[in-house]
Image (tube, rainbow, N blue to C red):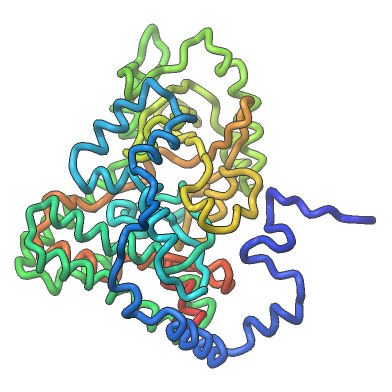
Length: 443
């Protein structure tokens, strides 16, 4: 019997990260020394000094033209919100303009070593979230643009984000440079540590509350920094579906419904055909979950749904929240359904091995994170649009960068926070996201 490969579940022949020759796979994983030498050779091909300068290409596309082209497939009614959020500050613009930087990075030197990229690695895309065991973890938490690509790109975008954020805070050039250098040094340091670890030790490594609190030992004002940290941790622990229930819903005529707050939150009308399709949509999405998690989700019933505007760069893409209810109304579960489109990296790297962009996002997240949302899944809509599903609020939190001091920004950059990237090509996962991947290459 001939067994066909499901291209939507695993890379097809010739896809990035795919290995079809067992002998070649054995050679690839041959020895630490061989990988170390490969890394040294890659450095010679693209010396560190070659990354020091960047000059815009003479035929560089107009940034506004790129943003307008990206917006063509988005909801036109929401585009003014997107641009308003982007123009709030230079850092807000950087957050919403990953497509611009992807084009610029594509022309920079690269060593040839591939990693699973976040694709939009700036400091606000790192934060707190709950592990399946309900521990608070810190890791990269946005994967809309994830694809395999040159490892350097994520590192450079992250370092640049510290400079832009520092300038927004009014820090001088020396402080901004110090934060950027600290982020790169942290990556290098963690890479060296991971390169000495065994495969399982790397796989299971993660950054939790205690590790983050340990960063404060270097703070100039430890008491003030600890107070900020404790406040952020408490806030993250309180961000769950019960909190969302109190903030986003109300009881009308004895029935729980999501509040209307247009244009940011718009309840799906009772007569909308989407409501008639919701049960089929849920069942299709559930099929992408692990059996035990699908069994758990089967215990919840649909209550309500709404369109919700999220983020900065994502504004205009289709995004929804779905309210489910477990044993009773005191056991809510909010899921977020977010459109997954073409990655901003496409056109600069080989196309995704996944035919479904929602699957691409979910697979990248599972590969890169130390632990991921138990309800991560995907679904293709009636109009051919791809979506991925996750919990709306699951102890999610992020750093209050706007109120950081220069000292705190450097600590945030230099600490044992997740260092970006996992190398699909090297077969190594990255709990502190990037670092583990590339560790196996001996960079």
